[in-house]
Image 1 (cartoon, rainbow, N blue to C red):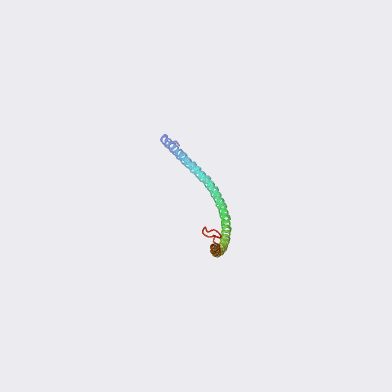
Image 2 (image 1 turned 90 degrees about the horizontal axis):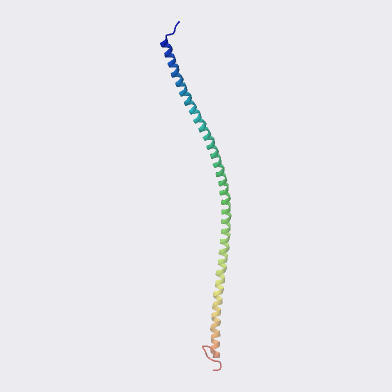
Length: 130
């Protein structure tokens, strides 16, 4: 049985079109495979970045806990110092009262010394015996 020449040309033409479609599908599949590979690599890198960020956040949390402990300790020391300052302020107030009382006594003694000096005639530029 003879196949007509026209039919052979038609089959060859169809085979060429099929080959072109196959190459196009193969190129698209290769492109998609490369894109998936790139995405997969990017996903791995993203996972590594996220892991590093989580470690960094953990370290920062640890540092915050340490700093918070230090602040709490300093706050306790400030409270203790504030108590001491309050106690010292009370002592200063008491001492100030004593100084005021002594100053009053000194003033009273000064008045008496001045009275004695006047009596002796040596006050306000007066000369003794004169």
